[in-house]
Amino acid sequence: MAIYNKDITMSCHKIALFGEAEKGEFCFPLAFSQLPILADTLGHPPDGSYGLHLAIRTLIFEKDILYVRVKEEGFSLQDYERGLYLLKQNHPSHPLSAICMPGVGHARIVDQALDLCRLHSAILITTEKDFYDYMTGFNAS
Image (cartoon, rainbow, N blue to C red; front, side, top):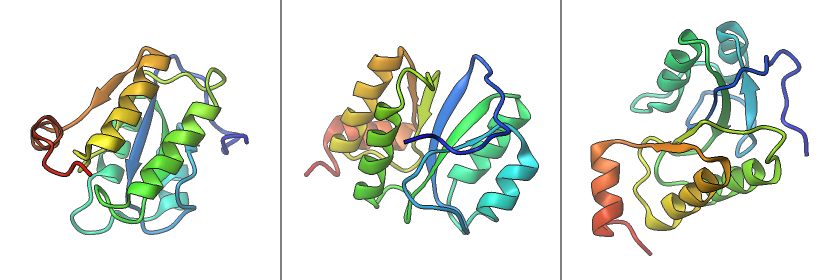
């Protein structure tokens, strides 16, 4: 399975970002290196979501992204698992520098993301609240 976007530049820093969006395919890593293409493909961010806001900031700092659209940030566990699986299948053709999943503190998902981080020698970007939830097992099941 190939990651879509013929306009992606192969920068040395590629960040996988999970989040909600107004439109676009669910659970599939879409590659972006230009803000207008991101906006055309994914539309506006839904209220209360952070994924697209972080994607915009990442592109402003000239880092490529692989955006995985999920139905609901932090709650659509199957969407996260599918996205992580597809990112793992594309290793090493698309090495990652970081994975960012705002709103996710669920142990099963974070553990899978950490496994992928180890595979890529990448970092996991999280919030203090999500890290606390992960460490305390708040949403573990």
